[in-house]
Length: 344
Image (cartoon, rainbow, N blue to C red; front, side):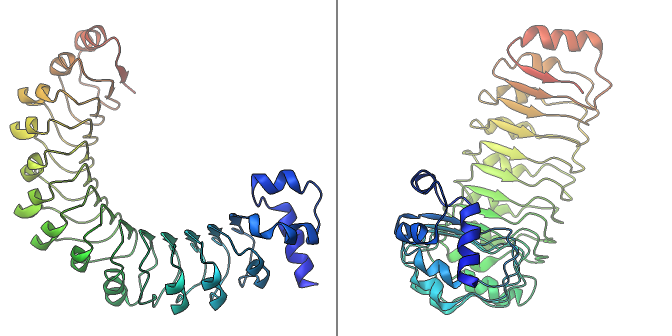
């Protein structure tokens, strides 16, 4: 009976576009006949308390989504999916993952966010993308050390884990290009983080950071940096040495002044300065020739004349700024007819 109930559910869920055409009316036998053709299986949000044994029939799965269920343990047969590339286990009740997962030779992306994890497999050698948001609140140090052994990781998300310290052990992840540490309680960034020679995207939003180490400039490949919602009272000048930076978010910090050296960011395209304490932009700001998007909303900015000279701008955010004279507003719109200017 359990078997037929499971396949009845599969009839409701979309297995793949191909099967939907080939099996217009649902039949257990027909589904089994085509099981090897199924590449993607979505069993998310189905109130499952365990992984249905019947999915063993889908030998060639590349993507399996078991998120938003009540699963407490994973069966060892999960290792039988030798072609599995993407596995989503987020929002379950998992405290550990079986060591047999090390036998998944093609598993590149694993999402285990929002689980009460206490342990992880020793080896996940093929893994490139790991999302563990709000999943490392127990045995944190041990779990971070374990993750640092997944040598092929390129993308790691550690959002909402109450981390007090920057995960220095990750420096040995030589292929890491994207690191998300949003919404933790990190106060100090160690000088050792300069060892991230391949890092391109770093999200430090919503922490308790007030300074960047002098060695920060050694993150020479950074293209995106987010330090929004921290405790910076001054714009970190070391950022102006990150010459490959394309996207920078320093919003919602008590910063009152931009350094003249900001003009060195010649590849900058998107700059978010929302809700700072900036009264005026330095004259050198207009030398940012590649800047296309700038958010200046909720600043005590009084004059937009300099922005009027920046013909490269495509979008300007000025919402919540009430001190700009009408003649300056008119001049801005007239000078940049192709630019989207948001005033409210």
